[in-house]
Length: 467
Ligand SMILES: [Zn+2]
Image 1 (cartoon, protein in one colour):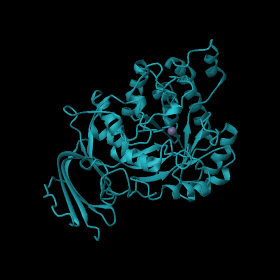
Image 2 (cartoon, helix red, strand yellow):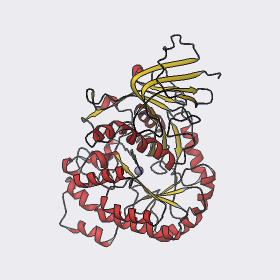
Image 3 (cartoon, helix red, strand yellow):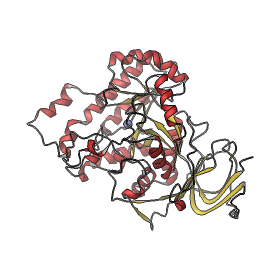
Image 4 (tube, helix red, strand yellow):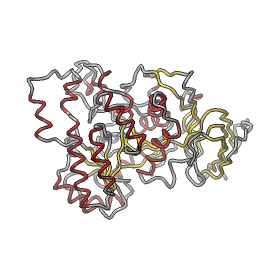
């Protein structure tokens, strides 16, 4: 153990197989980065005093110890749109919220991750800049079927495609015809196909033909992307899946609860279909969104309160598998804040680093406990991205990614303000909201990468690896 070890003890540790936090003491070998021992009791340890010691001990007391979170849907946009976000700022924001692994989306960077060459460029750019571990999704666009198997071999965790305009021209959407080619190519590979599930149909666009609706009114935007667009997309996906049953398909950022019966039916038929939703669909609703505020624009849109309640129910019932951020920022000009033009604004919500507090705060009002939340944010997302062998749980043999977290929800409120946002463009739909639960320290493979007591990052290094 040349780099020594880290031992952390707490009365509240989130361990696999328990539905309540447990007393435990965890030791990580920093050399290998792996958890080597878990004692199922709280063994208060004397803090190591000397700075040069190779044996670091932390008594977390009543603070919670969580497995490092895995955010499986993040747009880091580098290279190419680094003024929107980047590996450095994005992963700092992540680690400040207890995330130790992010999986980067293939689009909004230029070039997109649609060839092995582009993936290599992305990896070279990311190298040395990451505060969390970073894995990559590949992209499916018209014509790149020959690139898919090489991308799997090069390590992408799966592929994302769009059934509707993506918003950037270098990442075009695919048609049903295209998809047959891609799915044939992928069906025997150890991978997953992710769908942005909105599909335009004549009926879904007819709403737009009303006499020029006001683009600053949220309702105008909401009407332009009705639930049917998600429903139709998911019908198409499940129909295609019947032909390529071995390929797992995944719905990213589900918003429309009316699509849930189709998903449930597909799963009952044995289709390998998984589903995620996002913090914003669970914590915001259209009834309290203001007009002229494009910071709440995302696609698919945030819908009404009863839709939000249905998403929560589906999550609790297991019909939705997990929750991700879909952190998708842009430069402030593109958010059209001055004009308040929701229709013209870039669609995407910044939230990297706030997710745990968002779900904890909202979950409190819905009687959802911390072990359930952590399973949605860590175990299930790690499994989705094929990372379960090293990430997602506090278990001997897995990476020593752990978070010391102060949940003192009932007493300690935290004001979301620009100062505590670590991502690049400090614009958030959540600004001003009172959230609960604060990350004290984050460890990546046994090494400290975020410390509230040191302004976050003072004297620390970006130790993230590319997975
Ligand atoms: Zn996205």
